[in-house]
Length: 221
Image (cartoon, rainbow, N blue to C red; front, side, top):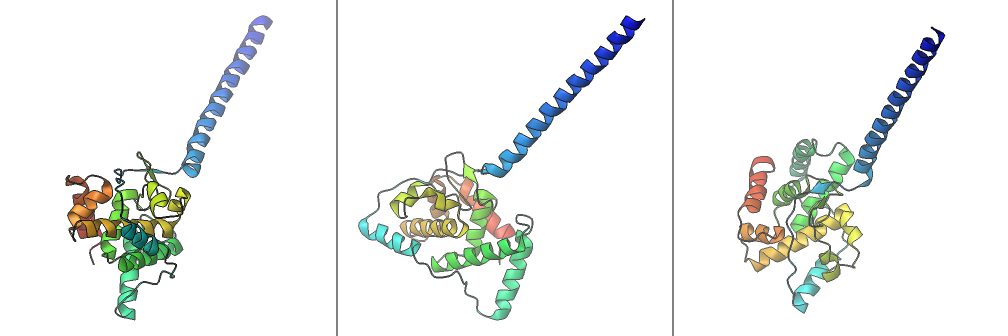
């Protein structure tokens, strides 16, 4: 009888020990998953922008556009237009970015960089949504980085050679707008083909249709 009781106690302790080990293991996996989400950049879908040799004149022009350090202050026809645009874009972006200060900074930067590159700000916002879902630290399966999913080779061609700058919001949007403007010039203003070049999928309709669809359905102004 005593031996049976002891066996029962031992079995109970052993069972509790297994349960505790299982709990510890589960907690370890949950913690690893959680912290990997914080420490590792989120993935993103993007095609590989292709390197194409640039003439010295084009490279210098792109470098000059990239290194202009004017503070991002977008243009509006009036104060009322500014208030209406910012208010409406805040509402549309709220589901992607909770922080109102971050939303404000991103919207001002996107509009400013689009305008200085001669692009439609709504097109740039649509491109960011398709490329990264407004995730600043996104990395695609081909290595494109940041909000506008810029390939690191651009930092060597027209930048300072430091690919980590592509995770800076303003730097990334500036790179993206300068590159898209470059492709638009190559394609003589054809937005559809310029978007194909941007995504590394020239000649295919999927990506341009995604961006233009997002522009017309979510970001039209």
